[in-house]
Length: 336
Image (cartoon, rainbow, N blue to C red; front, side, top):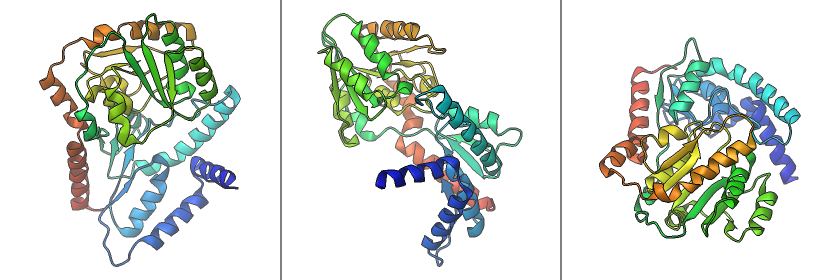
């Protein structure tokens, strides 16, 4: 029953059911302490914008929202077949169109990347609210990872869901064509390709599939590897793995899609390849070529002053200061 209930809740959230919105709003108002004055309401999920607007109106407070995905949202990138993908896309379009007018009435929007921000500005024309880029911060612990050393045998790392949109199957196929004794670690979450990835790893002793570890242990995982791989096959809105790779001064290999290019702008240890269309053979070949450059990229010198300046917008202090400023400015003007 628990699994069935979870599926029902996910469906309600996905369809943005108005009855469900009303229930969330009612419960939120019940939980709010009436004796406290609330100065601002911040929405952290696109599907919550209607509830956020209504809650802000009840509290006579301004509101803002953080956009974590491109607009309109991408859906069903890992759907099992074209029919399911098309049905979900139609439902998503209908849902998104109903929410667009709500977003235009927010005091401001914050996007986690320029890629996400640009998509929102285009989609909300002709009257988008003020939009700001507020990058997700890299945890401080990653800055303590030891500097990159280049051993004779490189260790490649993939972190993420074992599903088609993450490109993990292409990575495994490309890596198996790479000569030498290099190693590939797949730190994978559940996904539709899990069985296939485990089968491929069993056929190549250089590939190891590990279970997910607590996030607090990830800096140690990065310290054990020299190359971070993010060969996504969709427009990744941000790319936290890519940012972690740059912060730890690792080689980063990925696709020139979504928010990845802006995180790797000017980084001499990065190799991005274009992956559009459906030519799998071409994608695998481009990825294999990028993997083969890893040793050369690992030896590329870094301008530490440039890296520090570039990564400043990705610091927790910048993140907190920006949100604090935006909220204070909105509260000073009031209204939503």
